[in-house]
Image 1: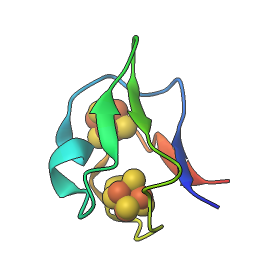
Image 2: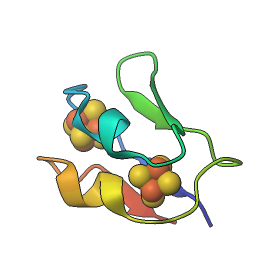
Image 3: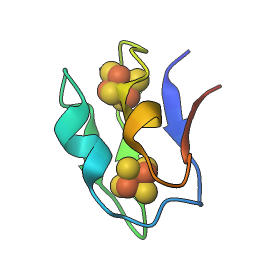
Length: 56
Ligand code: SF4
Ligand code: SF4
């Protein structure tokens, strides 16, 4: 399953730069992950200051 960004996201943008497949983009009020592109590397979860991305 792909990673998902929760509503805890504060739109800092840190995860977008870390994603190796550019699956993360700014969405409405928070960042979002393209589930079809995500390779579940966990880099976004590692860099996020609020722990918003998680595997579901
Ligand atoms: Fe990108 Fe990896 Fe996060 Fe998936 S788990 S969105 S591939 S950084
Ligand atoms: Fe949101 Fe975390 Fe990504 Fe920052 S690093 S944009 S808080 S999910």
